Image (cartoon, rainbow, N blue to C red; front, side):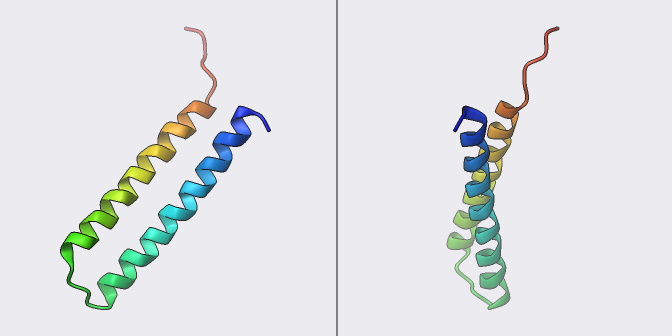
Length: 66
């Protein structure tokens, strides 16, 4: 397994976690859950995952000479 495969696997795992967090957040909101601190933490984690995925995706793009 080369580096690109490892990065792609990591992106896939992060994408699944991001999607799962989205479902949890939507479920808590629709159920009338009012723990705002928990919702904020979940949303912050979701944003962190998205940022991490973007950084990994940038590693997959080869550098081009100027």
